Every structure is written in C-alpha cells, then in structure tokens.
Length: 256
Ligand SMILES: Nc1ncnc2c1ncn2[C@@H]1O[C@H](COP(=O)(O)OP(=O)(O)OP(=O)(O)O)[C@@H](O)[C@H]1O
Image 1 (spheres, rainbow, N blue to C red):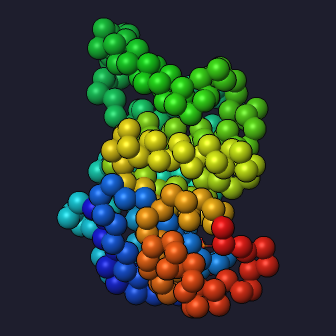
Image 2 (cartoon, rainbow, N blue to C red):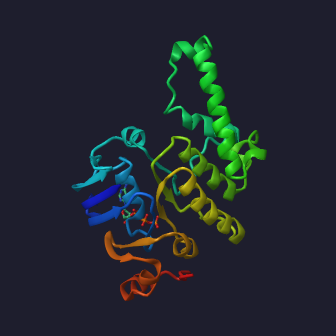
Image 3 (tube, rainbow, N blue to C red):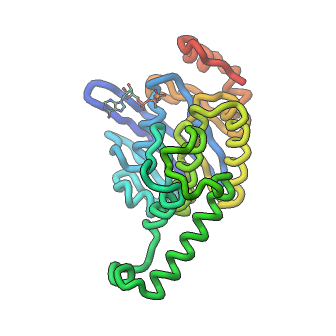
C-alpha cells in the first residue's frame, strides 16, 4: 500500500534520512522507532508532503506521491496526527471534528450562505458522524467542552478522531501515547486495534512507549541516524544487537 524507495532527505549538512526503504502492506499496523533525532518524524513529513525528498520515490497504492502537496496526499487517503498536538483549542470538541470533515464536503458557498437542503443534510450527516467517532473514543460526553480543557490524554485521542474524520486509508500516528498514563495507554492500544478493523485502516505509528509498539505492531522498522538499521517482528527487533546498541544512550529506554 505504501512504498518508500531509497528516500534521502538532507537539511543543509544534516542527512535526516539516508536511502530509506519502507514497505507497508494493506491492513498492517507497523511501528517506526528509533532514538531521538533518528528521522522518524521526517519519514512522516515526506510521506505527507511537508518535505520533498532529495532522492527516492514514494508510492501509495501504486501511485507516485513523491512530490504531491499535503492537501493532495490527504485527498488520496493519508491522514496523520502530530507529535505536538494541533487542535483548535478555543473550539468545542465536536467542532474540532466537524472542521476536519470539510475536506470532503460537496456543498458550495451558495449552499452554505442560503442554507440549502443539500447544505443542511450534509451538515446533519457530518454532525452524526462526528458524534459516532466521539462515542468510539469515549469523548461524546465532552463534545461541547473546549478542546483546551480536555486532559492531555484526551486531547491526543481527539487528534486521532480528527485524523479519522477525513476517512483515510492510511493513518500515520506520531507518538499517540505520549503523556498518557498506563491505563490510558492500555485503552489506546485497544482503540487502535479496534479502529483498524472498523475503518479498514493501515496504520504506521511512531512511538517511544515500547509496550505500545511491542503489543500492537506486527512489524517494526528501526531508524538510527537516518538509516533503517533493523526490520522485523517485535521479538526479533527487541533482541537485535544493533537496535540494543542504538538505544544504549537513551537513559529511560526499556523494552516491554
Ligand atoms: N526542518 C528541519 N530543518 C533542519 N533539520 C531538521 C529539520 N527537521 C528535522 N531535522 C533534523 O533531522 C534529524 C531527524 O529529525 P526527526 O525530527 O525526523 O527525528 P525523530 O526521530 O522524529 O526525533 P524525535 O524522536 O526526537 O522526535 C534531526 O537531526 C533533526 O534535527
């Protein structure tokens, strides 16, 4: 479904990604790990069109998306969350979700201004869909609260709801468990597996919490200094000497 072929990204003298190859099959949950600065977020940024690679090619469903813009990548069915939460903090929870639907709306300005039946019908459908998504994530009761008033873990969940609102085929999650307590993290693992099945998704996730990666990913890519140093099932990766060595400098690192 997603193929990253020989991708290199340079920032001035820094080689953020060096000849990276990543292959993701439809329906998989794939982990992307590596020490700080290894290049994980850069992978998300080249997939989603924020950066262009210096060399290499990216294919999504056999379609070349290497130089596509972010809105084009999104329209093709790739959606993402960000390491730093990007919500409309002064808007309600449900409005945050409804705004995300606006990529898919079919009514025009005329319909909106004159509140035509097409507009009203679509708005009603979006409202219902938003409510359904919020129910799945346990956020329905808080739908009228301002996003900024949600606890951190729930803001992260709201980010995922927003990413799902565009009906993606491939979901990129950047550290979804960051800032969550163990109970929230456990719920998140179940939620990710649940939404994968329910919405027929393929998921690529960056995560520092190894329990998440080890429990829900069938395959893991390990990056270090911009290079893929290991690929494999959680057990293989966990015992790979190159991976252990790459992580030695990371004080709080612990495989689950
Ligand atoms: N826009 C940019 N300009 C210059 N250097 C950048 C830019 N984005 C990333 N880098 C550099 O590229 C390298 C990879 O960064 P990246 O953010 O992809 O790593 P990461 O694995 O996501 O790290 P972390 O786990 O800390 O988020 C780092 O050396 C970083 O400083």
